[in-house]
Image 1 (cartoon, rainbow, N blue to C red):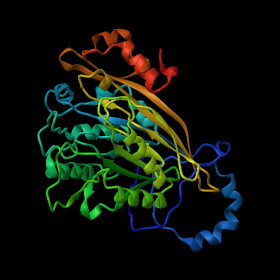
Image 2 (spheres, rainbow, N blue to C red):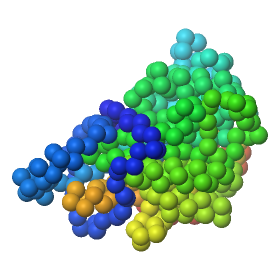
Image 3 (tube, rainbow, N blue to C red):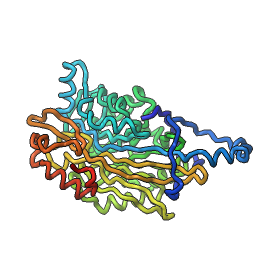
Image 4 (cartoon, one colour):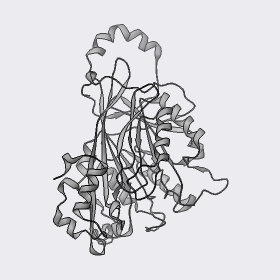
Length: 401
């Protein structure tokens, strides 16, 4: 995680650059070490300095940024009750749950989370089907190193309009430097959050298929965008493509608890890529699904994680125990402005809980033992099931013991 200064840019602005790919032979490491932000551009000063800075510009290394993304942070009641017990009821300590993955989050230049439950202390904590999570959880996610949080998911209206306003208030007041996207006030609905990371600009957009039959009241001053709003999404992605080097889109799509990617997921992904999206971070099916490059209209490539699965949960289905952290390297050619996405990777993770939902914890599968798996109380979950599932879906046998 780096210190981040978000840049919120209205989609009415048209200045920016187009995202394409570069030849891998041009890659080199970045030396930048923190987030900065500016949407100002002085064309006259750039023109006057082009000649004198040309040799220096050629010698500078191409900037790179490492991305890591996590799936659904799905906080069921056993998770927040155990967090409360750790403090003796004087708050919530969620940190032990994430101990095995925190270093991976912290070392990335950009770490993105799907926060599946609203976070606010204005409502009491609650479980499925209408979730609400204590603010300590959000605080500790940021402490761990997350820089951007998508709230585009089917539970964003679990506490209605008031809950949505409360969670946005929490993020904006307690963590104003964090990118939060996927819902907003109507006043800000055409604004696109952008962050500059190591000299590369990233734009963030989030959309969902549905909200479990819940909806904002007529005349609400809040806005969420559903995937069926095709023209609006097309407009937002195209504008984001003009404003940033890399467009990150978080769609909450697909069938729940299946490792099969649907035709709708594939079509939505291709549409997003055709309009200008570069990195697709999918969630909703609650289990790990495949990842792949997707060809853009100009022949270059975007990348999609169709579903990362759950970061954590206490679901009672074995597929719900299977997730991953997605990793990707983003590099920008300073001479051409073109972008390449390289070194895609998945870090398999398993959610573990024991009888009575005790000892909830995320494990990297490379550290998950058969002895631990025998204690996992999720029905029909076994070590062999997890091993075969990762081999089937992720094709990453290098991670298997």
